[in-house]
Structure formats: structure tokens, C-alpha cells
Image 1 (cartoon, helix red, strand yellow):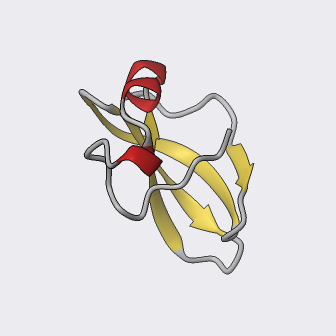
Image 2: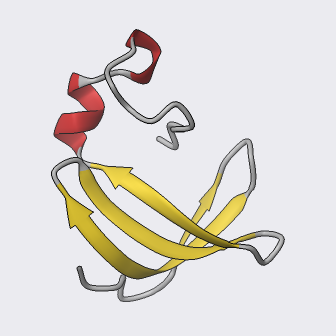
Length: 71
């Protein structure tokens, strides 16, 4: 998986994240590495539009229990 051309910034209820490297990709979407606002390393899975729409988190669609919706 290629890295983003420039870092991607996300701000959520939990923290602010900067994602700057592509780690991998699977059937549900891509995984990006970066850091949070405290400088901790993080990996964030970005679900494909099809997976995000077809398996809502609030309906127990089989997604990770710690998943958060950013947009």
C-alpha cells in the first residue's frame, strides 16, 4: 500500500492523529500508520465505503469493538 502524498490529519473525540505511511490493505480497507497528539505511534484502519455502509457499528455488524466513525 502506498503512503499518502502528504500526511493526513484527523481530529476525533479521542485525539488528533497524523497518518503518514501506508501499512497494508485488506478486504475491509487500508491501514495507515502515524501518531497521536501525544506522540504515540498508532495504526488506523480506514474502512472502504462499502464495508462502512454495509456493517454499521451500532448494529453489531462484526466490526472491531473499538472502531470509531470519523466522517
